[in-house]
Length: 138
Image (cartoon, rainbow, N blue to C red; front, side, top):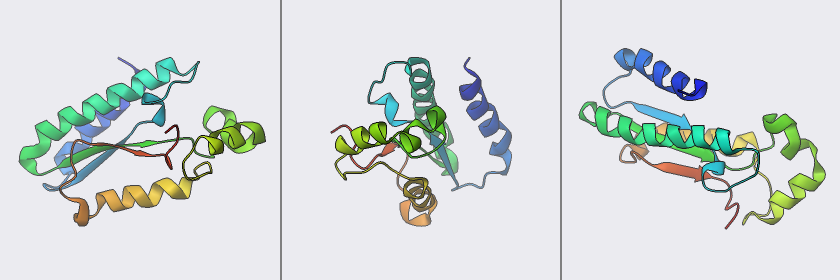
């Protein structure tokens, strides 16, 4: 079993006794489970497994009213991949050019979305993969 997937699974198992009924779990995936990029096959497969685990957890924890979802960010200006999206102007420009909103994402595009997903206003969203990519690769 992949180290990352084990981490998600074991952390969830450890926290389940203290997660309140009606609580929320948000797992992180990647836009790379929808788009392909050479060199990221193993990473994308691991994230795809997290998406499947999310659906199973949603079903298994539904009796407790716990909603489980996956957020899948697109390309974000971070240290991921050695900071290539953030630090390489050519890569950044290319991704911005294939993104409907015309730019690459920043961390502040993801955090508020997750906070919103965790709110009571979104209590009926469950077992979903929610891509947060600005429309990358449409």
